[in-house]
Image 1: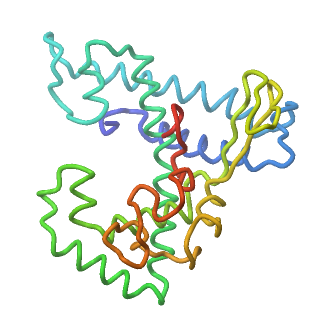
Image 2 (image 1 turned 90 degrees about the vertical axis):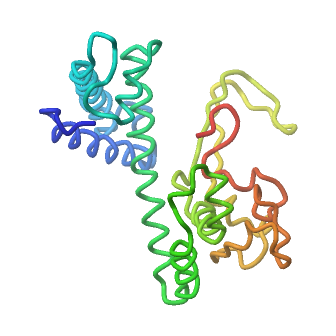
Length: 253
């Protein structure tokens, strides 16, 4: 919804640099940001994040001008327009939603699409790619209205997408800070400790997944496949927590 926003190019540039810098911070070893020595972290917290907040709030204010006296959107029907139409969301609430969608949902989507193209266009995957293209061409896409319709009408494509997420999760490494001392599986975790796990490793763990672990096999997710005997929710793994490209629990994406 930025087509009529005078600072659209500036907003796009700030978002791009913000994503670049937070990835750079995450990859710093040792984590210099914890001791105030990360130039990338200072750039994010002192310049990019405040600037991004200011630009998005300015965009929200500009878009509110498109509404008539009855609170109806008279120009653009998009996500921001829908959020602005709400009678209960403040500008700060809308800002938070947009941050989630734009920042958490842009680089992750791009990296997943990149991984899918990388895997599917390898010569050995020609048969699979042809199967996906045929499946898509045989389905009337205008009849698909829900995620369940996608899974039912496009099982090969759906399985392939899950395989891409299994092998190349958009967030390969996740950490959580303990807010209090706790006992986890017999191990004491002191308050302030950072617990980490890797969705990338979980998706390739040979103790959980059937061989060949590092190959795309969409049939893992097909409950009708006699070879894999898979449950669609786990891809044949022993439990659903072996497949965590979006995390789990109250903080799952």
